[in-house]
Length: 126
Image 1 (cartoon, rainbow, N blue to C red):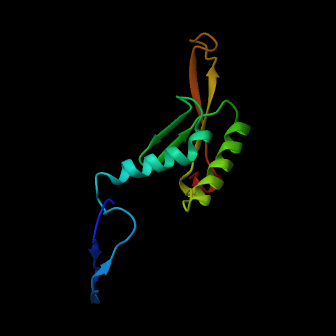
Image 2: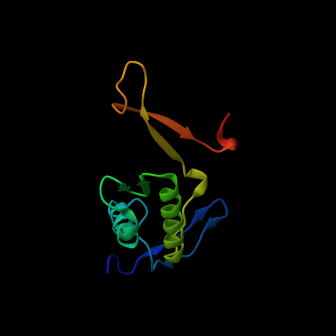
Image 3: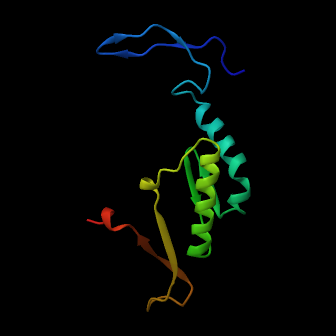
């Protein structure tokens, strides 16, 4: 057990609550929180991740890299369903994707560089 006999109180302009027992989670600001989260996320998404460097997990961020847009859509759908099955959710308003295409600029040989084509929804383009 990580913590025993943990209690907390809520303080607001209306006053402070009576102490109550905390039976789940880790203490806010605990250095172990991101590690525990990423260990759980790694375990429940292992079959979706693929080989390195195609997936990166860091704290509560996840990067999926796929060869095609269809592969990415399929794996994002699987990821979303998997997270929901374990009581988590993906914040789709923070979800972005980026396509990379081979560069064929005049000063570069074909396939030697990459340029990015950012893709955003219309409501985020100003």
